[in-house]
Length: 154
Image 1 (cartoon, one colour):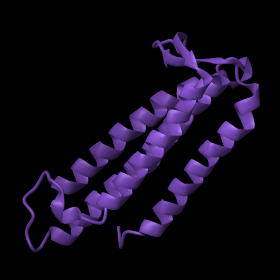
Image 2: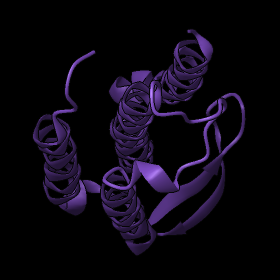
Image 3: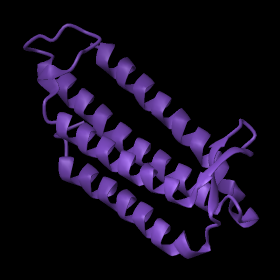
């Protein structure tokens, strides 16, 4: 697995957030005054709010990214599924850091996808975006399962 390349992950996360903000700027003049704020399991909007409500999503995403990225530098404060010993400390810390950074990327993509769905809900040609959210949620679980399998392996 090698050394953790924080800069690589940071670059990906920054690109996602730049894309998120660019999407807001590109579509801002095209969005209706009222946007969906909640979707049912079929992807149908069942609650609506002000167009300004979409601005909270990139803010939450960026704050969450900063927190996840920052704590990835302090693996000694994490909880682990195995006892940390001198012989497994480096490997366990590296696995946990990769877990946090990968989750950061996927969660950022999930927020981007949710924003895109909200912003383009009135454009039928963009309906494919609804199916990205379950994919990103599945990826979160797969990343966590992968981590736990690797963490408990001797």
